[in-house]
Image (cartoon, rainbow, N blue to C red; front, side, top):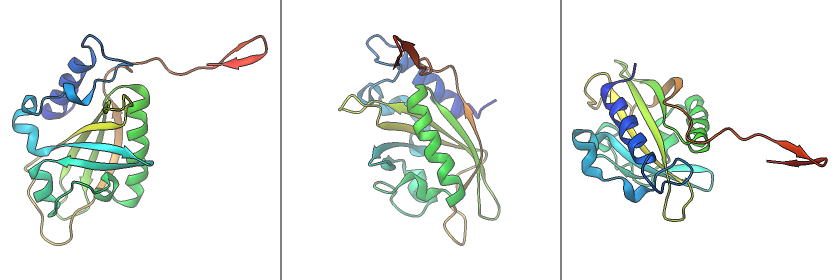
Length: 180
């Protein structure tokens, strides 16, 4: 069972993905109206895939405050410990490939540790490619800056949300040639 804000974002994205004209099960970024996120907007973000890296293009004010710096332009992996950053990048690739949201359960490496969920959902950019992400942090308690070092996130697990929006890729052989 997900945090209510996580479930809200999953349901909202699923509604966008089921709209008429959506290609490959992934809605376009322009279909997302920020006001639809309501009180969750300060904890939401949009990220772009650039040259194999996920970079935050927009981040809510609560996220900037928690990490004590403007996050726009920063790699999403910078918020995570090195071991968790690899898992994050795999989740980013998988959410676009499977055309469905993924949820990463995590905690901060600070004392006291804060538990949270981060949901990732793919979006299509102006190029038509699934190169954008809608994300939301849903903390178990208030997202209040901690004292000391800037916290980093430690991933515990990645969970699928819903059914894939497109079938898994498979290979077939026709006349001795491999085809997709």
